[in-house]
Image (tube, rainbow, N blue to C red; front, side):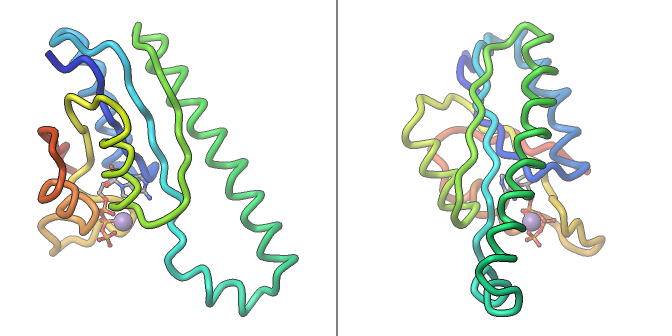
Length: 145
Ligand code: ATP
Ligand code: MN
């Protein structure tokens, strides 16, 4: 039933916790997982202004390397669990990119963390997960912190 899973991750604790549930979805027919990280460009203008172009590009390059390393680790874990994995890195605004990838791929279920890197105690739901739940076509499995 849940053949293609979209797993957006910001590498936060809650997003990492979601991995265990993705593995369990195998029993419900999951075959392929699209692991998506969005390089959040909000705030880039001020960082660029402060650092200058050359330092900014260096920072972006090292961020990308760290992202690729983390995504490869996740990929290995899911492949070892017997799933097919596609990894994507997109730059932009997280909600928009998550919904764009959902449109592009034949996504049957989205698995997302209730919270992410901010993980504020008093917040009921992170802003990315809230908007994805509101706007996605596919059902969403929200993994709680
Ligand atoms: P906020 O960002 O509103 O301050 P938060 O960081 O606690 O709050 P969200 O950003 O909504 O919470 O994160 C919830 C989930 O959304 C994460 O566990 C992750 O699955 C997904 N997510 C958040 N940011 C990204 C991103 N940049 N790329 C991919 N997935 C993301
Ligand atoms: Mn966040």
